[in-house]
Image 1 (cartoon, helix red, strand yellow):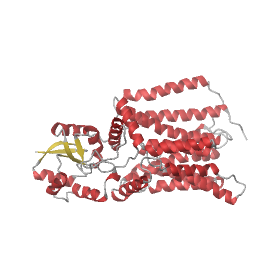
Image 2 (cartoon, rainbow, N blue to C red; image 1 turned 30 degrees about the vertical axis):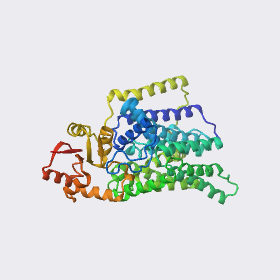
Image 3 (cartoon, rainbow, N blue to C red; image 1 turned 60 degrees about the vertical axis):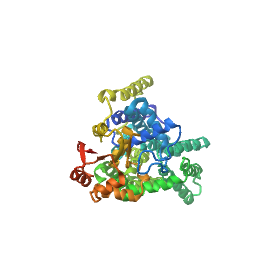
Image 4 (cartoon, helix red, strand yellow; image 1 turned 90 degrees about the horizontal axis):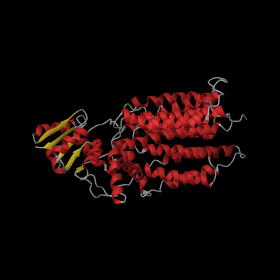
Length: 485
């Protein structure tokens, strides 16, 4: 077995550091496109101010006082604290760091797995990371999912590299609890580690001398139990199931649909490209794959084909395998790393300067973070005419309304899909299409204002215009606001 060579080891660190710095820099210039982050910040502010979890509805007047799930409470508190500390720039910095660190850990996993024989050539590692990023960048918005991504990468690292001791299991348990309380998607970790454990058990069944996968089995048990380690306990499964049903089956939100769905396909080109390359590599290396690797790839790919949002986790999971396969197929003495050993002091200094640049420079390029859905001007017009009251609103604009105007404004609906029963969503759609009489809408909701989307609410807007009872306060391609005359 060839021992690890210091130049090659340095090469892997150069690649990992370069990818991390590039991601941190570029993600801070990316517009914030998840409008749910607004109400999450406000929930965090309320929890910090009260010192308690918010378990009763406070934002919507249609469900005021009803029990509300405390999903992702820890991420909301962190977001609120950062928002108070440095505004949206601080929130964006955290997201960029979590996202970049997740891919950094995935690359480190690849490097450490291969370094048992020799460190991967940096080209192979870089290619593996690029393949992982292809399906992920389309879903790299500022949202609590970045906490889950980091937790997923960290758990995979410990599951594959250890330490295979009580300390390692404790680390997995701690990460799992933090993951589940920031973003309730720990079931992905259960499936991934469960696939590795099942593969090892099948291998032992076929070859009795194969080591018993005690560590992986215990890790799966810890992950299963950690799903309950939230203030919601067993209820978290009911809420997650309701959220899935409404998102996928009722509202047809594209990230919950298969990647080949017409509404999802345009942003999934990176996934299809990486998937095609993966298929070629699987065919080339099929005789060298373990049962654990086969099951792992099949489970993660199956999840990505079920819902496009899981492609981001698929990319993280397969970075070590892609790196390993590419390194095995790389022709000898091609694309190798120079045998010149770089000065460690120079590398450290370069890294520190790089960190300072990527965290400071975006603020000079963009004085403030940009928003993909910027409705600030619309809400300013509303505030001038209706400083307080009930607002019948487009679901996506619920978050900005809540952060901008709570408690003066009370909204009808927002992005917490699990909070509203199916009948509310059906009525919401019928009203948007203009299939409910305006008098019935006014009797049911008694709104002081309307904040709508000009396309989605075309039917309702027609009713408001025809009635002559409402004046248009603002209109642009994203937002239209009305108040009573």
